Image (spheres, rainbow, N blue to C red):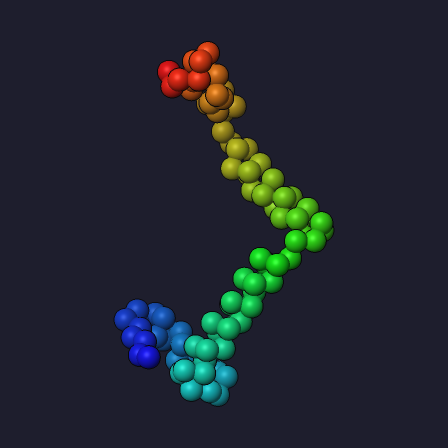
Length: 89
């Protein structure tokens, strides 16, 4: 099966990776993709309580940063958006 890479930056990066690791282009791509898939698989299967707590903490910090400079009165609640029977205002 053929694969055509039309992005010049991606092509250059693959060539640099192949040169630095001393392998061919196909092997460099195979290795990079395999490593990334392994990382994603590890994330998907890591459901330990510590991992979940760490993920929750990272999300909380990100949300805190996002909201740090926002006016709290600009945040809408359900009461602001919906009437007493649940229809949009």
